[in-house]
Amino acid sequence: MIPRQSDLQNAPQSVFITGATGFIGQRLVASLLNNDKTVLAQVRPSRLPDRRIPDGCEQLAVDLTDVMGLREALAGVDAAIYCAGSVRGRDPGDFATANVDGVRALVEALDGLDEPPPVLLLSSLAASKPGVSDYANSKYLGEQALQGATGLCWTILRPPAVYGPGDKEMLPVLRMARRGLLAHAGPADQRLSLIHVDDLVSAIQTWLSVPMKCAQQTFAIDDGTLRGYDWEAIGDAVSDGSFRMLKIPGFLLNGSARINLYFSKLFGYSPMLSPGKVRELQQAEWLCDNSSFRRVTGWRPRMKLRQGARQLFNSM
Image (cartoon, rainbow, N blue to C red; front, side, top):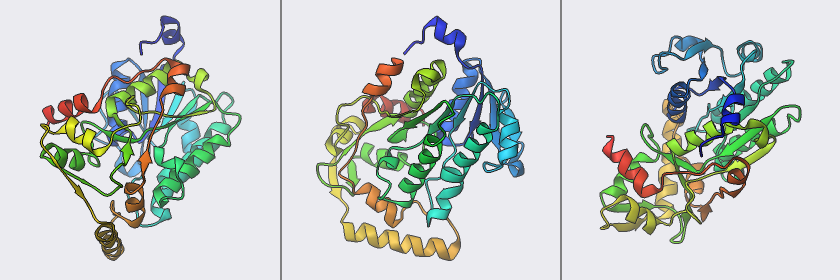
């Protein structure tokens, strides 16, 4: 979407962002700077200065749950974008700080301002099924914290699996598919929505041009592929057309997840593969529908999986 000139003139020019060093956050910060926005990035005091944040972006030393520090950082900015998040964890506590407590702190900080700016929460499609995993529940609780703030101009975006340059979670799956092996844990007819990181960033930029039109609304957005992709479609898009399917037995995946969980507790790391993650992988579908967001903002994605995968592997 190309915003109207009137929208651009009224669009927020200074943006406060959390999660600026993450996969999506780094791509978003670069895009904001390229569009002449003033970007203020929340950085943990222990990491200041953070070399992952580009020149031209002001770094603010404040913890995610520091209400007073966040309030000071937010004073005078035109918009706030919450991109911080945890996708790995052993138990609910591992997800809580970034996915729940930080959102609550941001809401409290905004509530204390005379003129709070509009705020966008980058959530996850997983929040639509909070009972599936601790991660999904944490994203749901974070949304609830923002949705309860009736005095704020808030918007929630729920992307599905995000891929693109800088991604570490989807890349192994796409790389294996490119080599001709499609290993999956879900049912044979499983359907998945996807979105390229640059399309997600463009959706956020579009929101910045019309935040009031999106107030108090939650949108699940993807790359516009109707009913998402099945595994054969993923194989066709990513490989050279020659691939074979491999269904990972549930008992094997669950056993591996339990072993991984045990060792993560023993050695103190946050696992990606956990029993909750297995349940996420085994869902029959994770699907989005762009129609509501398109109707409100005019945004349209530009990158289907075939083009996005080609761009990703050409950049490596």
